[in-house]
Image (tube, rainbow, N blue to C red; front, top):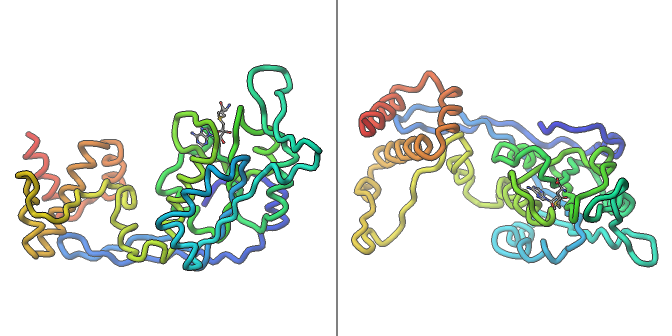
Length: 291
Ligand SMILES: C[S@@+](CC[C@H](N)C(=O)[O-])C[C@H]1O[C@@H](n2cnc3c(N)ncnc32)[C@H](O)[C@@H]1O
């Protein structure tokens, strides 16, 4: 599960029933052999709160496509909260100069604590920060097991350290680069997590087979027409032979992962060794093709 820092707010309020379950989903390998994929799934509606100084930056993407549909179908509830609305002073000040001097402004703790505490009802409180744990599909899956999630978007030089130590339970970075604010980062995380909520995508298989789900990159996809500008779809995909299609896809997933992400492939091998006979054969073929 997520590593959490001690948070009095969470200790007081985390009495949400744990409805996440781990189940083994049966899958078939290309050679017909059955294996199980552990799936951590929360069954029910997910509630997400986003705390930001710029609500307009997040509302548009939340209002379109699959995330909009998930909200309309009652699978997802998203509250967007303007941190400035939680200020009590006349000028609604949310930032101030850093103690000790230096460039930029720092987000003040009072409005942030007030905004979160006004609606908090349990679950991880995630601070988006370039200093956090780097976001991955595995982390998206961990988060998707929680019925409630909160996201704090920083801006300017970031948030007062007391927000990190006493309000946030988790810190997530979406990569080793610096954005102007946490809003785009929160959207990235919310999108990746929401699509793992059962029912949001419809076909559950799409999240089991895709890139990163099982430690491999996904195989290439083709659709009609069978030939475009002289570039043909591989014959096997038109053959109607499901076993051959599954084997081709597995081989292409191996090929892609080895070529593009040798680090991922090595990690996958470490977990999946000894390989099945069918996978060993595919690997030998790829090695021979490369030689
Ligand atoms: C300009 S950044 C602050 C960077 C901060 N001074 C530092 O050096 O760590 C402003 C805000 O953008 C968000 N942010 C920037 N880069 C991010 C990243 N890679 N992942 C997640 N959030 C990020 C954070 O919420 C951060 O508080």
